[in-house]
Image (cartoon, rainbow, N blue to C red):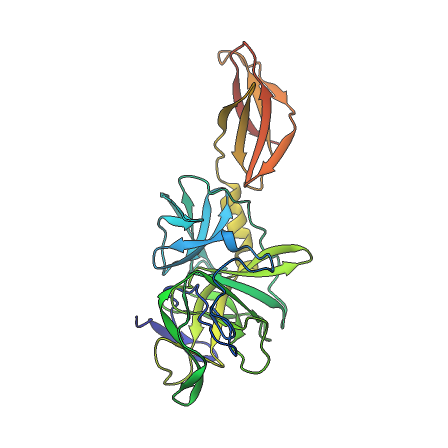
Length: 336
């Protein structure tokens, strides 16, 4: 695959990560989605970062945010998404995120018809600090060779096939910048594939990782801090390789957090009712908005009563258990 390239501020060239989430790292000296020191980072990391929330979308990756919404790169596009080996159909709803000047970004939210059994994901409220360690997860290429010389560079060839994989790295100094790989300006932070100051799984994004997740641990809670978007290659670097001093550019979630949360909060929750032993379980998705459960025995009347059942939050849904009665009853949700 020959990734598209576009001018990037303060960096020579940036190939679009058409499938950005797969660390191309193998061997004992490099880590990445190409991971320099391992070719086995294809299972959930022991760090506890949100592996299950990253899925396959079209030719790239996507991150499940909650209430049916998935985030990916615009150049990857909305579509069916696979999480945990199950494909969830797209319901046709989408929202392209915008910049503060109203211009379109290379980020899109889209909603699935059915809810994956995953909780709503916490979003970072600020850009990761310089040198903060982050985990990257995506469906891109991993390392397909041991560390080797590639022309004047040292690095790895990509694997022939993409894999879901993870790696980690440290955020560069300098805060955020704006790049454009041909799909709209986007505010990003970056990491550098470093030959000397490696993290435990030093990683560089590769084709297929676009739309994948960059996760930061805040206290004991893992947050989504970035979305894998583009890679910065060195001059005359061969395609299909990851070499030291390459950069990974990730959309800064904090910059777009308000739009993302507003979109999820505006989702009309669907109340589901299921029979369970001697009662019924009523559930609705966690959208970040507090809803109350009301009931009525006769829709022809306005005699709605507020219920206050014990609620559990499981797999991204609030659920209440109510005992069976011999009387017909109707339920509705109402914003608190």
